[in-house]
Image (cartoon, rainbow, N blue to C red; front, side):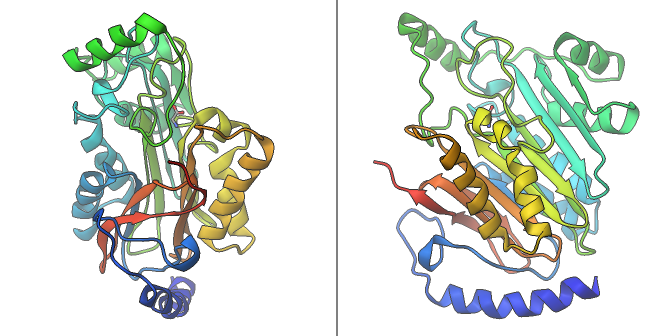
Length: 333
Ligand code: GLY
């Protein structure tokens, strides 16, 4: 990890200079640095997760990492906290249903050696992230979906459960009156949790879990369980995760793009920005379509970027424990 420590020293100087330009705001979110870019490096463990719900996820991941635990345990158990929060409407069994009224879940996990596991279109299991990890560790496959994934989970010690959330049912019944399929930017109906983390030895891992777009077509799967789209980890280059409209991320292999750009030496923030801009070049009409990326480079530098303002990520390092606003290309009202 000599290489990482040397790099961190350089980046820390840059970060301090950038941080000087920061002012506090009233939302409780640390602002993006001048020009919207975030750069940094961290000595010791590092955890980034999407959105405000990343705070409790990071707290759990940090508990594991700061005790010298496994980075894969940290990213699994971190996002599992949010899966168990049935007040969350974009992750886990409390999430918004598809247009037929079913809550269907997608998740994936990957470690620094590139091992990966994923499940998609899974119903009635509280922790799809743990099933994804079990697929990675106990099968020769990467991804199981739908009824096959549910059967395999049952056979391998996972218990289904029914979670009745009256608010979700009411919102679905309300939606059915019009049946108008229209995702809304930054409203917590499609925001997933993606987490990327590094332990004190520089080992990387990532996880991603979601209930997907609200009122999606039954059977729709987004980017979150797709290795290379919602998440990509390469121990030699870095780790990235995505949030937002999954179709746009899949079409550009978004997280893989970010990691490959970092492999070529790009700063994490610049890599995320370029991945966002590829999406914007490919899609002339980005109205109501948010996408954001977070990344950690293998040397400990980190960053993020999004199409629109309003994308916050939870950051945990030895020095920082806060919500940070990423830089962005467009503003929306
Ligand atoms: N990014 C989550 C989804 O599109 O399902």
